[in-house]
Image (cartoon, rainbow, N blue to C red; front, side):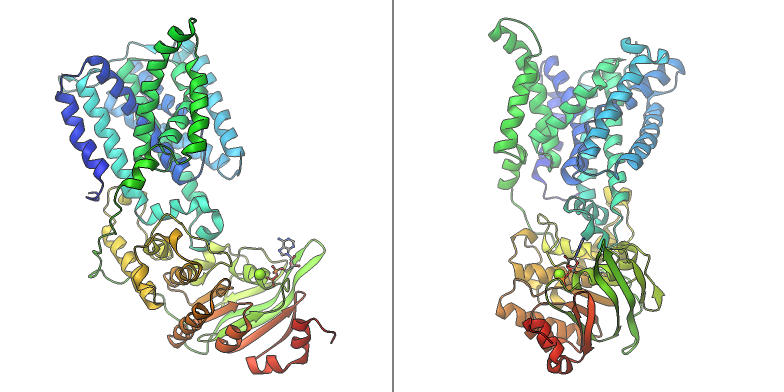
Length: 589
Ligand code: ADP
Ligand code: MG
């Protein structure tokens, strides 16, 4: 079901039944119930904001949606509250899908602004609909019951809420450690790398937006039957901000941060509401000011939240290697040596008046290493981006294994078996090397969000880990499997990117300046890796500045200058060409 190493999880699982039987005053049980409800909303924000990098102020509106759905249905139709939960979830999912489709293409500050607008409009809708009781809300809900057992608002409700919360936390932990989870974790680094791994970043943004909304909706359902009344004030923008605030204070990147934040803020809120008026002498919402100051201090001194302090102290045991006997992932058919893998035909890119790539043509045959060289600004990276679908072509055509890929986006091209690395290494620094490399195998698996949450994805997961290990060992990185990727030096980082690219089982590998920033020894190691890959039948396009490396490993060179093709040929031919010497030395020719 879930990993055994999570100490916090086991402590909580033990604590919930214990708290339920301890003779705690009812006041504290009620507090814990609120904390459980709020934590559920914050859990969604951990996924959406902490992991996915998407900020939402609108979660309270989804809480309201779950609450109003069950309130209206149980009061007006007599439907069982257990059924209304699912109606609420369905309504929430549909609205989150629509809101997400509209807003998640927006970048920067637009998304938070859009969620504010969404939160406000739902608040006023709830407050103005006669059927929903306007600003008075709906009163007289029943508490939840199972058969003849009334769950009420006390200890049984506590057990229910916290059981749901812990199930949600486990599902989230499972999700983050899976194929879709790695895709979600790649969102924060910008879309380029994720898309190059075959991941639809937009689809995953919408997915986590819906999941976060569903967590909020469940909390709303619980809240309605806990308070036995719903009114808009609990679902307004102020609460939306407060949920985000709780999550950030607790540690927006951590599942347990949600509970820490919700607990701390709820308790502080209550204490301050009593304490501050007594201190100041007049009543008012002064706690809001204290919270504002506290948030600034946390953001300044503990930007990763309170849980980050604990998380740093917890042991991080390396992933248990349980995949030795896993089957291999499906492999694609490879071109025969000598077949044309890539045909670049008169591709052209204009940036306004500048022709960065001017009708460039060349071929790559299977088993060849082709070097694309030229002075700075010659158009190499642009050519690379035109081939891999990152930039759109002004004109020209690219054929990959005979198929016209000219109009395809980069994730479709990667699915066909073209893999790439980046001039500036792009990785997920807080994942291990093994997990980063497994991201490359994304298109070779199919497990989705639900199977990952339920952990029925383990057979495929093991196959992916086995493949990632195999590719790391293939390029001599077997000793780094469990290392945190962000801790690697430049050389191993670049090799890790190559292993990640190899993990997709490519028919063509494109490397953008793989030797940049490497030391002499590491460059020799890289040359060795490239020759070995070639020996295994791999075709490679190499964009590189380092002439020694290029002359050493390439079969064919394509030389560019000012966007145009200067010449092409074997390294010896190119070296003997006076025009190339002139281009590099900057002399007239
Ligand atoms: P190289 O990789 O060979 O150093 P580039 O392909 O990065 O060269 O750039 C080729 C030319 O295109 C340069 O003159 C560069 O300034 C220009 N260029 C590259 N990208 C853009 C862009 N997005 N907008 C405008 N000009 C660009
Ligand atoms: Mg470049």
